Image (cartoon, rainbow, N blue to C red):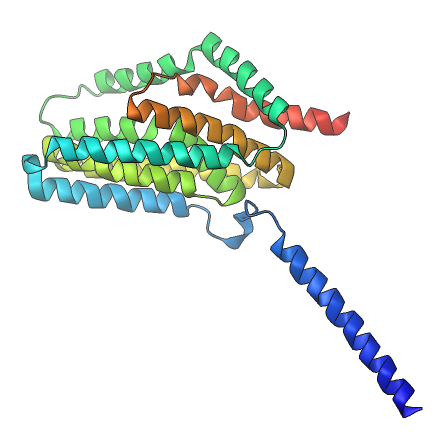
Length: 268
């Protein structure tokens, strides 16, 4: 009787252990992009702010003695790395046809609205409105803020950070901004350091908005949204290396379209 009872208890223990192992395996198979609940959102923006402050400090210390060719080479490396990050993101997508449709329609809408030109015009308007003068601290602040904030990488990276907790795009952008801040600070002074505040407010607000909307995004939507963002990031990498001028700003509507397309597909 005891043997039978012991065997029964051993069998129950094995069944329980098997169940625990299945749970552990299911956790291991959880998609890597579901990270927003780990409390690490905004980390990309914080890294970006720190990188600008460090780069600006180096620029102020060395002033105009920093070799221009070194900055150019560093940017080329960042361009290649940005392209690599974009490819890695894009390959996460499974609904390739839907990604293509969203990018094509998004580009058509973006070209119709001319988002890229409007972003450039916005920068010129701020410069004129604030009457930025040569040599003034305001010049470094405005120029650096526009370069660091007005771009597709800041938007895509902030959305990805807020929705999935993946701040790899903003980390890449942080390295680029830190490098750019060196010659900027050397040439335009301490005003460049103030652009870190612009980054904190701008990217932080976008990340917060995306985080608040996170319940709307299921794993499939996040995956395909990441893939669309990856294609845009690839375009940014190509622009940084100077291979071809791609109006990546005009691709931004694709980020909204892919969500709407996937929502419509789920309803059919």
